[in-house]
Image: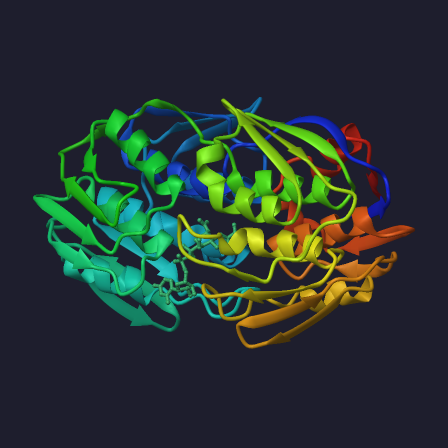
Length: 417
Ligand code: EPZ
């Protein structure tokens, strides 16, 4: 994989079309497996995680095609019910396919998803919910076998934590279960509403997404549909941070500003001017960013954990000291050591990070520790003097489409070789 080189201190100006949401596309691709016939997913970014998802669907017996940001999936001849171990390891969120496979095939076999760069990624909430829906679960040498006998049966499920993935897996498996399922303390992220919109247009009966109580009336069958993915609010936050650290002026097109109000308000507190205009949002950056006393990551609609790293990169060149509290993942700070190689002054202790703003960052050789940590390095490199070399950029390509090309179009000096 090539490395990414960024020569910093170039102002970013202009406009960018924000990609479709990675965290929407993955459950949507899983949902196509539930549908007989052909489904078409539009506004789909070409990402390594999308490529992995299409490999899984192909293994399951689907015919998949990706062309011009549109995925076509024909799930008529679905035949398998297992996710190959190498694909589970390639993409931890393959667990998202569990509910759809179990819902369609009444059996599913996955290897226990190992930890990932963000620490242990348990799936206890997924497993206990599927058991409540009537699935028998067997663990054998690191493999999990789920069997729902003659089919899942709707029930009431209360999540101990509003897990995004668990909420999505319950929706995917309950959509064609018999009876009604009620999820209490459900996650409220916009990507879950996007999944419900797809399933409802395919014939499902799902209500309440976006609130903490979701009701699913099981139906017998779902038919393939055409659906357009919502914009990626985390990619939007990433380009906002890039403009913020380069005194830039940027218009983000094809966004839904209501999905990232908590992000916009933090950038406004840092001295940026932000103007949502319909499905666009304009950001003007100040000459010098202001610190933010405390940022806490929370479940939606609070400040999202995925936007934390790029915000941290921006705060590292703000005037003053900011405090960050990561409340969602156990080990999300691995990238801060790499930011400190560029001259940032970040100290972390368990959930807390203290960022002492510096006047200047300077180029260094660094490497991506994970997807959003890699995005943070890109933002920091844009602010740094000199040319930064970023290695292991496959992490970035999991979630960002054409990032170096997009940055060049906005005035950055960024290239891969
Ligand atoms: C989704 O992950 C996203 N991934 C993550 O985005 C995002 O950070 C996360 O939601 C929170 O918003 C996709 O949508 C593909 P969770 P998910 O289940 O579903 C614990 C990115 O960078 N937990 O809400 O895995 C878990 O360990 C990625 O785009 C359990 O304890 O998130 C974590 O601490 C990173 N048991 C917390 O809950 C479970 O059974 C949040 O996890 C499940 C989760």
